[in-house]
Amino acid sequence: MTSIDVHDLTKEYGGRRAVDHLTFRVVPGRVTGFLGPNGAGKSTTMRLVLGLDRPTSGSARVGGRAYASLREPLRHVGALLDAGAPHGSRTARDHLRVLAASNRVPERRVDQVLEEAGLASVARNRVRTYSLGMRQRLGIAAALLGDPPVILLDEPSNGLDPEGIVWMRELLRELARQGRTVLVSSHLMNETASFADHLVVLGRGRLLADLPLRAFVDARVRPRVRVRTTKGDALGDLFTRHGIEAARGEDGRWTVLGARLDDIGRLAAGARLPILELAAEEATLEQAYLDLTRDETEFAGTPAPIRPQEA
Image (cartoon, rainbow, N blue to C red; front, top):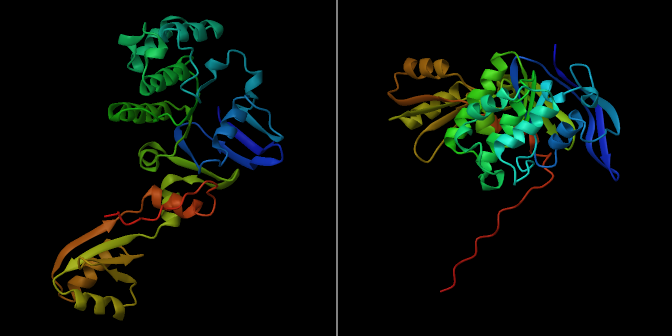
């Protein structure tokens, strides 16, 4: 099984610990979202996995082997860490041809991945003429070039337009369906929720969570039900009598915490209260993530005070 195995991984820079005794495993057949605030150690961990830096202690293995020991590594691991890496004077096609030749990848594969990434029509344009989104697509094409079983992508949505984001989302799902090991770092919670099956969350270099996405959300955010009736006071009294925690909003809607839709519906129906609205408010990944990382953010801003305009 071609997995990514990180064991007791530690990396220090001048006395600062960027990665702190980190252990987790990324397995085939699912997309693993790699989350954490700025400075949490995500990019450093990816660099350590790819042999671009040496750990202070611990290990990072791909399929049981260190990346540096892999012959023709593009056939084993595809990675996008920096969309600005290709030389601007080369065409996209020539950039991929060089990578293919150095890893004994058939040249026909170059045109295949350019087509898959939506760059076939501009493949002979110089990279310096590309937008950020086009460079991202080229970086993803390079990651796919060797048809590897393991894919690592750092912020792949950066610079993509809406069509590109949908393309990338579907690509990640398809790679997982093919049984590949996929690790994707992102700061976009809603986007991560659309493609990730599993989450690994870091904070200040330490592992904060390693579990399926739905379990992560459900463990940190209580379910809520939104309900509105013409008899708001009576509904509030009903909640009080049954020991139900609920808050009334300015618009007359009640938000019930830790409740299920069916339970609130049956309760209101039993009291013969006319219901104008009854809906579940599904917990989001963003809510759960912010709850977990609230005290782990190294770089946090504060809102600027609003100053009255001068006359």
